[in-house]
Length: 167
Image (cartoon, rainbow, N blue to C red; front, side, top):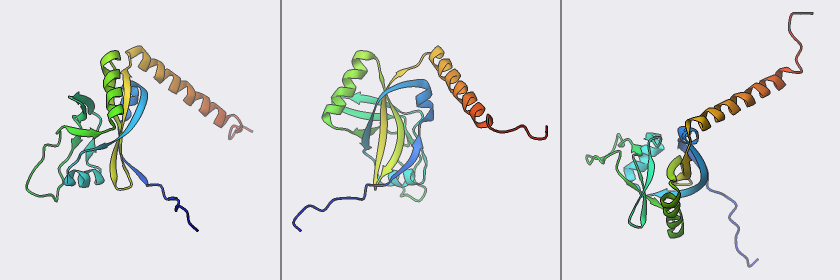
């Protein structure tokens, strides 16, 4: 049996935080999975769920991508050194992905928005989306569509049932 051993175990994914408001405020065109350059105690705080990505956004400096305004509460059992919870953290992307995102942001006026923070195995991953801001009428249209779908589902659930107490 001379062959490669197949890896059947895929790393487990545990979602820590999602940015639900991002899909309401932005039309997400593409998504990318990237790593984050973190310090040890930040990972422990993320494991405890003490993170907020709702106000975060992507930025570019030089040839690197960063996420700003992402709040990670300092670890309660950590050492004396207190790190700024809103510090700028580097996004770990491939060079082609950084160049692609930078080009899209510059030419079309799109934004890089953090969508989801999760553990993939032992690694912390951030899903970022390339999005265009929605106008107010787009948001209203989405809400109307969601309400219409909800009404249709409600009607189909109750269609086959007989009214109770009226026989």
